[in-house]
Structures are given as structure tokens and as C-alpha cells.
Image (cartoon, rainbow, N blue to C red):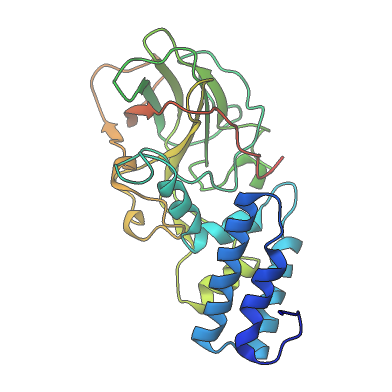
Length: 300
């Protein structure tokens, strides 16, 4: 007859697993049993000391304490250990078997971006930098254009800050919500984004410094496509000449996500008030059939 009394170290894991086995939710049982097995195996493999255990608990507590309405340290931590990208690739592109345009959400998406007309600008306050003209199309896996896809767009400014990090930018600057037309297309006007360091004033920053890692993300624009009957597409398209493409601190760069940001110094201007140089980006997104679920915004 089994009991909950621990006689030796080998008893701990099976005793915990037995205690959890009565959960009604089968998926909860599967996930938690695997979690416990792997966590216990991890402690055994590295022979985790009590001081290291205390440090780990302190880091978890600090992650929670560092999370607030305008910053999510938990997502940043998952990003910085490659966990977010792993989960994304496992769940997209035919369960990770094929290339996908999906990518991690990141910690800066906000709901309720301003609805913006096709071709409209997402620059909502003075934002110096080279202008960027983006033209995209959204199709299904067979290449058929998808109309009426709601596409959220958000990016950092040319100084590497999102508007919620920067008091000099207007609320919702460099954010917008577009709707694809009958040909599955949407377009917008913005400024070329810059790479930036992730916040390093919390436990994630401590981890990066201890590992001698830089905190930089390569320049990119985020896109989130939503349409009933299709799996929500969360992605980002990277600037192809960024110096940190091969060393993204959150491991978010896949080959499919490197865009062709073309510089123009002359030729026909996309608008009368454009000054050289300006950039263009053309990109095609593919959405898979599935359940349309919006993620929980990491910040308000």
C-alpha cells in the first residue's frame, strides 16, 4: 500500500505524481506530470544545491514583481531562453514540420490599436527617421487571397523604443489596425524601425549579464493577423541588414522572417512629400485554417 510518507530520495517523484493523478482534466494531468518529471530530473542532473534553489525561487519572485501594466518580465524571460520561439514553431507550420511565418508575440503588443485606412500612416507624433512604405498580402495555404483579415501592426521607433516606453511619443504611435481588401492586400506608411535592447533592469538583465550575452533585438515590425476560421498569425519581419540578425537575444529570427527592406535614393517617390532615402517592404503572409483566438495582451 502506497503512502505519502517519503522513505528515501527515490520516493519523491512517484509520490508527487500519485498525488496529482486524480485531476479530472486529462490535459492538466499530462502537462503537470511531465513538468514534475522533468523538473525533478533537472534537479538530479545538476545536483541542485539549496542555495541555487533559493536563488531560483528568488528569480521567479522577482519576475512577478517586475511585471506591470507596461512591462511583462515573464514573457521576456521565456523569450530570452528561447522558450517562446520553441513553442511557436511547435504549434505553427504544420506542427513545426514546415517553414512558417509565425513568430513570438513579444512583450509589447497592445489591444485596441487605432483602425487605419489602407495606405495610411501609423506615425502619430513627430518621429524622425527614413520613411518606410509597406505593402503586404495575406493568403491561405493554397495561395488564395484572404479578404477582411484584421492586421495589427506595431514597431519600435528609429531610436529603438516602443511608444509605451517613451514619453516623447504619442499614445499608440507606430501602431495601427488594418483590414485586407478583396485581393488580401493591405499597405501602410511608417518609418524604418531600429534594433533595440530588451529591458535589462530586472532578473532577465541579470541573467544576460551573467551569461555574457548582449541584450539586442534586430530591427523588425510586428504583425498580427486575425480572421474567423483561420489560426491567428503572430509574426514579425526583420530588417535584412541588421547587425544582430544572427544573435537575436530572444532567438526570434527564422529564415522566413527576414524581409527585403529596399533603400531608394532616387526614382519615383511613393508620395509627394517623401525625401530620400526611403525604404519599401513587400511581404506575403500565409494563414492556416483553424480556430481564431486572440492572445492576451502582455501590456495594457
